[in-house]
Length: 292
Image (cartoon, rainbow, N blue to C red):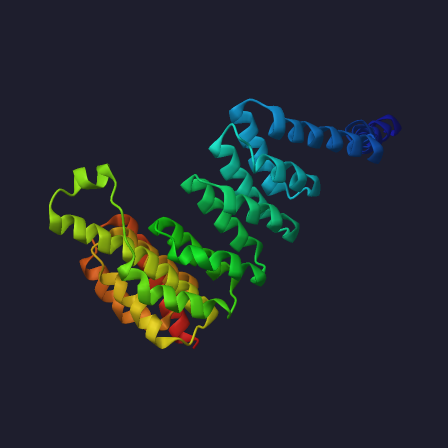
């Protein structure tokens, strides 16, 4: 009997000794962990600066997401990399995601020098994500840029800044948007060969810019009922991407005023990706209307 009790007691307490032993083996101490983390960070910085192209891009992306302060120094260097547009683009995005105002002078400088369209868009977007209202003056000139994609990105950036100072510039840009020139690429002209088709495409590009301006204005002033109506009206656009983005904007803005228009839009919408967004927008509008 005594022997059985001793065996049972050993069986019960042995796991606890095992756990203590395991704990000491896996967690050998604070100093060890700090040293290991430091080595991993140094490897990340080296990869961002000197790795092979794909490894550099991944390291730069990780730097932005990790928000390690030293990554700011690394990304502010790779932002001006001369070997790869992609590296500059990811660096601008990473600096934006880190949301450090220290990065703004570097982004301003890069914005003034950058020639590549995608990189410039990433820089403008990154400045908006950082969220310093003083950046409005740096972004506003791009609302009149000759490229509609730059104008659209500038409106998105000002939306992120949420500064009342931007209302005047956004309103002026809205009034002049239809007069801005849109240069169609050879691919566009090949796809849309008729004059009517090309005019419709140009109108779609203008609408893509205008909906971002409406969205920005409504984030800054949610009681701007005139622009609420203008945004909702774009649910009837012939461009599926306009309808899709309007649906996303309505979700973000939680507009109960859009409820009836969304119901009508769903009756005629054929694109699955657009229908999915419109359903979400409808549910959001229904809930917003219920608790208004």
